[in-house]
Image (cartoon, rainbow, N blue to C red; front, top):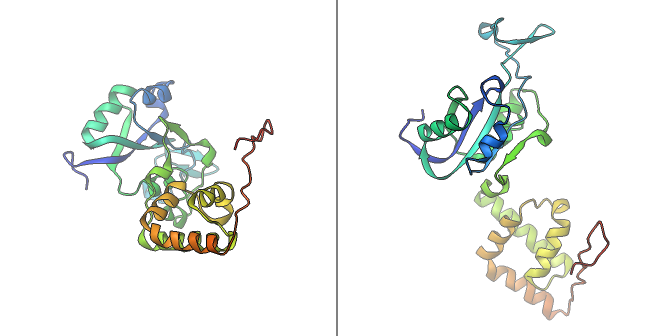
Length: 234
């Protein structure tokens, strides 16, 4: 259980529409920290009849749903306590605004829960919400908080080395250019992970680049083109 004096940088909490001002997005933005706010959770079904509350539940076609609410992922600038985050949100949105605030260990998993795409939510067959309805505040970027484990790093390294061999790439700039254009189709989503893996394994990557160079390969670098104007950017 999270204690009020425990400190962390990553938090989640719930806010209810009836307890926050209409300009709540602007109020949160003024706090100056990255946040991601879920779509409105208005189809979270209560399947346990013992928890049904006819006075507070939203009832549709005989099904009981939890009171509509938003989930928020909050990234503090420095390690702080849950109580300090609670006070900050209350000052911004009102004294009744925040509920169930807690420290989270995995930003990635908590972010996925915003739309019920986390493993736990999928296993419980919870209603899936539209990812396009997530609200991003103060440049929240989930890629900054996804950490690869050692197995994933090794798999990414092997994938990049395979790309170098098959595409006859002779330096790291060519590799990054290729990933920028074709990364998604290769299953590479995060350029920061690519940079980290290359930096940590520079010797191995250099062997592959040098081998391609010695074999006389020359990478046909495709220029970047502005999709709207057709202008060649580089």
